[in-house]
Length: 110
Image (spheres, helix red, strand yellow):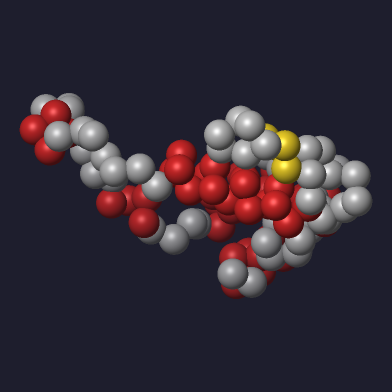
């Protein structure tokens, strides 16, 4: 969990009917869940005919290809130092300091 949402000083939140003020942390989390459920889980009102009229873009199958060593080196050089490590746990500053022959090892860690 990134942060503790169940702290004692949670900001009150109005119920869906805007009549009741929810103050308890569990109630606030449940209200957020209710809110996002109503916003994100709606039935689509867009017709299939409208979708079919949208201009189609070409499919770029080459984007599915594995990265080359040169592409990896270029990407590592563009990393900003001082940022959090990625999902591989390798900080950008470490990746950028590796010798070029060691950078190809990064491709094997995934």
